[in-house]
Amino acid sequence: MRAALLLAGAALALSAVVPAHASGSHTKAELVVLLGTQADGGGSIDPRIGDLPQLKTRPLSSYNTYRLLDRTTLDLEQGTPTNYSAPNGSTLALKLKNVSTDHRYTVREEISGGILRHPVHVEVTQSPNDSVFVGGLPYQGGAIFFGIKILP
Amino acid sequence: MDLMAYADGELAGEDKARVEAWLETSEEARRALGAMESPAVGEWLSREMEARAARGGADGIADAVMLKAAAPERGGKVVPMRRRGMVGGAIVGVLALAAAGLLYVKTHDGGSKSLVAQATTAPGASTAPAAPEAEGAGIEVNEVEAPARDVSVYYLDQPQSTNTSVVIWIGDEKQHGAGGN
Image (cartoon, rainbow over all chains, first blue to last red):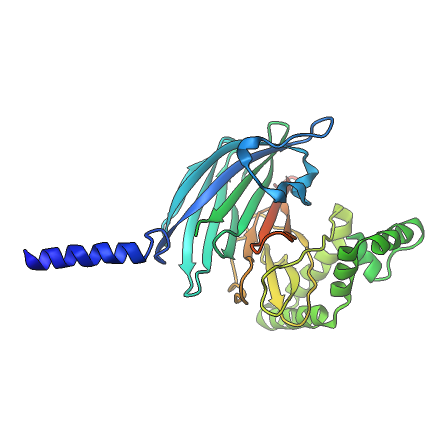
């Protein structure tokens, strides 16, 4: 009984020190799905998107209107794809390939289905809070973008 | 791509004047031009091509040359980019390995210039050589595979942020005759 209590206490202490989402074998990623369109006039940014200065920078600024289609947090397990069903009918699969000792996350992304006849694969190595936008595929008169950020 | 053509001395007349006007007003354009003229980029490209030739014959070289030659016809653009937070700064050269149907971004020490390149990947491309080593903070785009589509990789400049952002733009599907995509 005492051993069990000790183990439970150790686990509790460990969980306070090491956040579960940054343990190295798994992490959390924020996914925003955006629809970019070109509107007459000055355009607008959906206030639900929040502060994303990247939208006003080339090449994303080629669209002057952005609407938030979805925002979600995904759990990424090393070596196991996490699937997300996108509004455009495609599937985004994120796989955490590696976490380095200096907290660099190598993530492989696959977009398949929808209008794609062949899957698109992307592999990036990024730090927490770096943003990777993958997209440009036509959707609803504009283009759809997936913004992926590893959460710290 | 106009900037690349300008760097190669291929522009004349109105096109040349337009690029020169852009260079006068854009520091980023000047930086990109400087990167293109940097010997480091050429040396790295030569090394890569030599290595590819040693591994698999001259096809890779031909494909790389054809890619470079074909890029302006596709209306591609060379976009200046900056990698924030890189240790000691870096040149980011981009080699589109058309033979493998993949786009890679390779980093080099020794400067602060960056390039963006475009590639159309071939249908059925599937083999991925080893990714380049990370050289510090910032996003490393190790691989992009988008069969039969143009791909552009943009590193965004975010002066107000220590974090980096990358846009990987998947272009329209290309038609390659009856057998293409």
